[in-house]
Image (cartoon, rainbow, N blue to C red):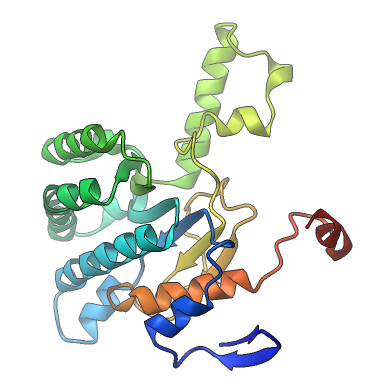
Length: 266
C-alpha cells in the first residue's frame, strides 16, 4: 500500500508496528470500528488442523485487537462473533464456539476492568446457552461504568433481523400511541436498533479476502469506509489494524457531498 505523507509517497506494507503507529493521525481516528472476523476455518485447514483450532487461535486476535484499540484511542469496537446463520453449522463446532465464548468472558473480565472497557452485546442473545447468557449479564453489569472504550460483540446477530425487530417495536409503540407515524424518521428509527446509543461505524474491516458484508450492521454501515484484507482472522494483529486505519485516514469521506463542500466544511 502506498500513501502520501508530507509530500512523500511511502510504501507502508513493510513497515513495523511502531513505524506504522507513528504515521497514524491521532486526531483523525475512526470513532467506531466494526470487524467481520472471517477465515478461522481456512487458517486451520491450510495447517491440517480441525476448524476448532482456527477459532481458538482467533481468540488471540480478538485479545490483541481489543487492547490495541483501547491503547490508541478507538471509542467503539464491534466484532461479528456469531451470526444468526452460524447456528446452521455442525453441532460440535457450534458447541465449541459457545465454550470458547464463555471462557473468553471468564478470562477477560479482569482485562476489561483494568482497561476501563465497557462490554456490550447485540443480537438475539436469548438463543445462546444459559451459562453463556449468565456470563454475558455478569460482564455487562460489572463493566457498565467503564467509559474509555466500548467492546460490542455481535452474537446470534443478523442485520435484517435487527431491522425487522426495530419495525415491530415501532409498530407496537405506534399502536399504543407512543409514536406518531409522521414522527418516524431516520433518527427515531436508529433509536430502535440494537446499537442505539452507539455511533455508526466509520470503518468496517473484513478479513480473509471475502468482499461482502454478510448481513452485518446493514443500516449502520451506510456511510462506513469498507476495508477488505486477505489476511485470515487468526493472523490479524496490530500491524494489520494499523494498515486499515492508515487506509481509512487517506480516504475522503463525503457523505453525499462534493469535494468543494467538504473543503468548505473543513
